[in-house]
Image 1: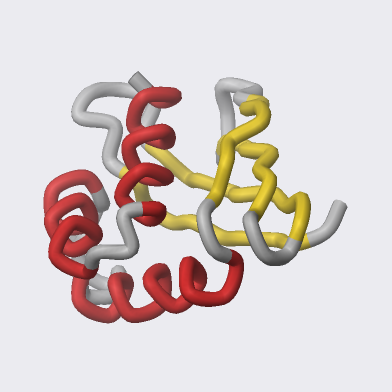
Image 2 (image 1 turned 135 degrees about the vertical axis):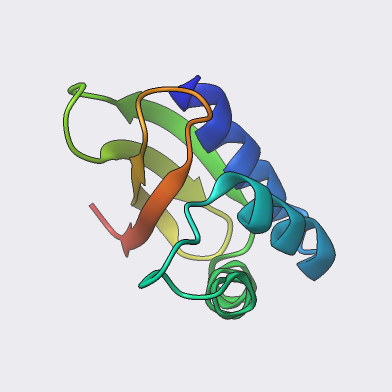
Length: 103
């Protein structure tokens, strides 16, 4: 479901491994144009991990419409919010994600 997709995404980020992240993005993101290519996303999302360190999910708010707000704690920069736009039906593809640090 939605929550397990997001938890799997965070695990892929925390792996710090580009191949793991690329496999997740290739398989679980909606990569149809005009979306960025998986390799571009790996660069961006891998860069986030380099800056914030490991991410711990502390909560999820899903109104059932629009992106899921995921409250997180980052290793290097404290609390934040991961905003994940994900399909509500199988195969639960992620369309977009964003990260806000601070609360």
